[in-house]
Image 1 (cartoon, helix red, strand yellow):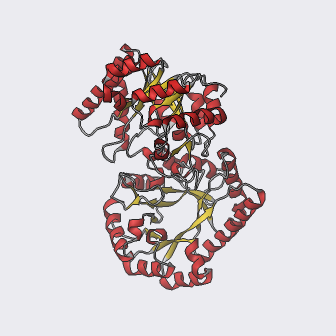
Image 2: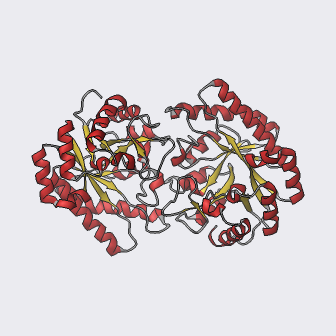
Image 3: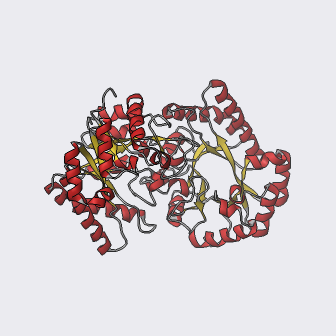
Length: 270
Length: 270
């Protein structure tokens, strides 16, 4: 990359910061966009979050996260749907048209049924999302999260689910950490043309220190980030590039240092 | 399952045992087959291993492992190939026709080239394997091992590689731990008809304690083991069912206790 116009800080990367601190950090670093997490919004409330975002002049690239559709009982699945409607509302209020869906694990061993519940959840959520101008962005997670976070684990699967809808209704997120291993990656990115609603970068460190908290800074791992970025662009995506890193060692560092490193690595490796 | 005729102890499950102890354990437990690891053979030498196996009257279901084809230099790739020829020789000497291939990681970020090297390695190894009556069994590993153990990570990919050869030359291993998450699983098992050279069982524990040493005993996790076993059988496989569990807590228990639990769980969950 040659400038920071498309750079977005996914807020989880500087988890020790609250929303105000993250927005201030982005402003200081000249990072024009942020991806916000709902639990950070909840700390001060939606009205306060909306005011902070507006005052900071930082654009919100996406809200993390909706999803978590599968549950053992119909009433619990309804509760999840209600919560997804609140997530849509928050996205709209915060000024982003993209709600990232982490689709959720199965409540039992029946992964096929859980996948059906995800599809049903998206179907049920969509009318409200459309009414609020919010697109649903299915993020396939790495298969190592299949049991605990998402039964949607490949871009193929996310594409198939999204293709049931118009391109301006449901799309996919391409996160290099989740999809880099996939032999079908470039074919599926091409297939996602017009439906890519977000591009997330980090890296896969070797050896991997931890299943959840082991993501690396761009350049510290084995992912061909630039090649994937170019494929995503060839598929028509020119939107925000979110840096999303779950890593305790990075969380433990001062946020401003992390942002400075993100900017350097973004230029060199994205 | 209703009897133990197809049960095989993959030796890594009782890692604290040497080959003699594992064979004795199988004999005591009435487990008729064992999958042997090369580093266990190396401890006492091939001739000794061959004698121990013959004396114990235990059948060898497979040898673990060949593979590890990608390497940065041509001479290193040649050395890997030479080592694979020794693995073929050991398999033949130990009386199994199945060499399991853990195909290896890329030496750098270029996963596509590494995948090509795997295909070339199999191509180069095959004539010798055929001459010794040994089939090459491509085992797709879980994608979380893509950077450190195998660039072959889906059954789709393994099937495509195997289909370049006759069914009695190159096939695939279906290991439930590695493939359970795959939305294409049942389609790809069907596609592998006539090429399935092994079926491995364990379980995926939630939460997963460790990326490498976190496999569970059958029944302790979320994998639909029986459903997958039935699919493998519907695809024509009636061979050994290997129990292969990398788990420090299981390794720390007395081997005879582990074998007793394996037998009970095999009846209940496989």
